Amino acid sequence: MKNLRSVIIAIIIVFSCFFDQLGLYNDNFNIRNPFTIDLFILGLLAVITIYFLNKIKLKEIHILQKILALLFGIFMVLGDSFHKLNSWNMLFDSYLLILITIIRVIGYSFIFIMIFNYLNKWLNKSEKIKKCKSKFCLYFDNHPIKCSFIVLILAWLIYMVAFYPIILSPDPSYQILQFFNIPTKYITYAIPLSNEVNLTNHHPVLHTMLLGGFLKLGRLFDSDNLGLFFYSLFQTFVLMSSLIATIYVLKKENVNVKIRLILLCFYAFVPMFPFYAMSGVKDVLYTSFIIFYGIFIYLIVKNKDLNKKGLLLFLINIILVALFRNNGVYVVCLSLPFVIIFNKKYRKSLLLILIIFISFYISFDKVLLPSLKITSGSIREVLSIPFQQTARLAKESPESFTKEEKEVVDGILNFDTLAKRYDPEKSDDVKNKYDPTTTNEELKEYFKVWFSGLLKHPEVYVEATMNNVYGYFYPGHTRWYIYGKYYSLINDEGVVDYHYNSLSGLRNVLFAVGKHFPYVPLIGLVSNIGFYGLVLLTLLVYIIIKKKYEYIFVILPSLISLLICIASPVNSYFRYAMPYIFFIPFVLCLFINEVKYNKKNTNN
View 1 (cartoon, rainbow, N blue to C red):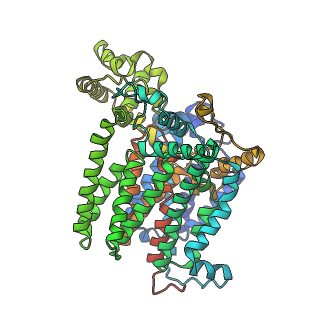
View 2 (cartoon, rainbow, N blue to C red):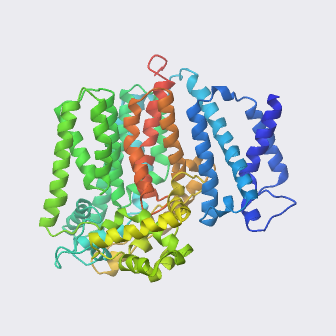
View 3 (cartoon, one colour):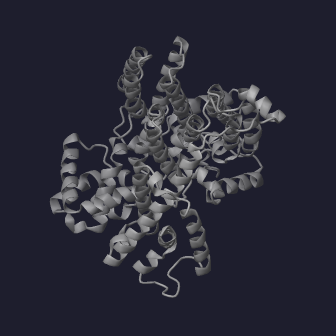
């Protein structure tokens, strides 16, 4: 009976993964082989699946894991449809397609149940890790900071040489123009406080000043390139320090040296780390401060000793979190209060820190910046979800809008071109036409139109949002943004003399490796945005199952960052997901060590 069940489930699983549902939807169906791979390979995979299924005991799978497996199954099927069609029509366009969709969800759910089953067995098996006796391991164990620094420098040095002085993409290039008070598109996104000041807080002012300040420093040596390289060195040092800090904490927590060594190799040799160390985007420093923030939260919820100096550093760190990305303030304000409630030891100190933090940020954002005539970012930045929903409705069902409703939308977003500007995975073209002179009353009128559309076509609104976020939970969407190509904007404007060195061949090789790394089977998942979304939710469930509730507060900033990604203007954008992608491996090492290789069983 068990073997028969395994055979049926195996057939469902291989059907789920390889059935050509898109071909059926498009009436382009191969009746001889309705699958996307050779039938022999399909049969072989089914046999292998049966083997693993026979070892599974469903009764040992926690109910939360079953629910999560079902949720992940839904993510996989929806993601597949949106990835191929920018729509869920492939899943629900006929009764036959609905039936196939249900079968595929069940099949994918069993795949994740299998994964959870083997994870459970591995985590529940308490075992010792043999002591690493090599000279390098001993040196690394005794000198975690020094050794980690040397390894990272040696591993990243080739990127620092090849991409000297810095990798500039559009965002930091525009920031440099703003530093020199040259008008950019960002000044048109809001009403300027002064016609003489072209600097805005669309990109964090502190980061803009930092970029410009290092440029000025370079000019003391008659070299803009040198100034930009000084910035790269500073940013690399900060990012490297945050990563080394995770290694140091693992050492202090008696995490086995082999686990620490694996994490160090991960930092050293996965291309996303050195590429972003050399990229001038604000997200790199922000991510570094988020990592420090997560470390501080771990130390606090574990009741580690923090003196006044440590608490002061914590205050400075959360201020930097807020100053280096505009949504950083939400990460702190939505996570720190829960830590304060949970932790008795530092409750009064943390409450005071939160009050000082909020007071500082309000003073900075509402007093200092306006007094300097620095324009704040536009409200359109938080309206990507409703704007995308309206745009999709305008494209798919323009007749749904009355004449008066079209006029209301036109006054804010230019209705005539709205449907053509709609990009299902990126809201920039839609929100860039937002009229900065829009009043609160006009926004209220717009939301009345938006709500009317929701009542008429709720399915369009749901599709619009799913289409803009599915990549954060679907590993099949392998878009990965690293920067490496030369971007000449600041040179074209005659502001800065920025240029790469003559090592174009080396740059091309490194960029090709970095660009294609996410597509390497299995290994590439460590750079996959959707994979980390699933890992984060899986970690949350395991934290609950293992009753290690303090870890919920440790990953809370990552969960909030994931929610921010959902509300962001771009689907599966690596820069937005970087705060939790760079932090999760550290938490996994801590958690696995605690539930599997605890102090009593660990042999260091």
